[in-house]
Image (cartoon, rainbow, N blue to C red):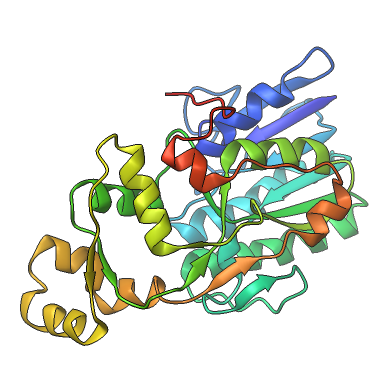
Length: 301
């Protein structure tokens, strides 16, 4: 099978490429540097020449609000335009949990209304729509995966920022904030993609175990090798701290209205569709992996 993977240098790509590269597959990568096909999808349409692909895994994407539309949406359109002459048999689009409203609640299924609150989520949702139409028009089997917040070697964005705040004692938890979020290891997402691409459909991907923000912070603290006692504040004192001390790094990192709102809404993903498609699906418990207490997980560093 000839396979094209975009975003192979990203966190997910670093786990995906070794799984796809075997004696039965020829895998080409597309990214801005150090790839078989060098292309900046924010600006360029790839040139494939005579190359054809049986499977395309589009994992390139941005979690930066500044260039989300350029890469997530317009970059996807450029990739599809390049594939127009020779469409693949199968296409996997790596979307995101952010296509849902941040306060959607618990156990959200794939048919839940998409109501993204961020540019990242909006660009992913619109890219999903674009890919669905293109694949239907070209008779291409489509698989859309919506990973929860992913963890692995090279994690970036929101979770990297949270980790830095925790290990530098800047994380402040508002007392009685029991908001839940879904998590997943990037290695499990990669393995799911390898199995789902020939099935087709839309799938949330999480470890199936919701976690509280404070549990995540404590796991990150354990990961650092120096378990730190987390700081708790009642909501009214958190508001006072922000009003009078927002210039302090710890207060700005944890108690700004934007961050406080983001960390006080529950959104957990249902794994029902994934388990039906993959009955033997058995992901690692992400909290245990982050805490480095899972002895079976193949840590890369």
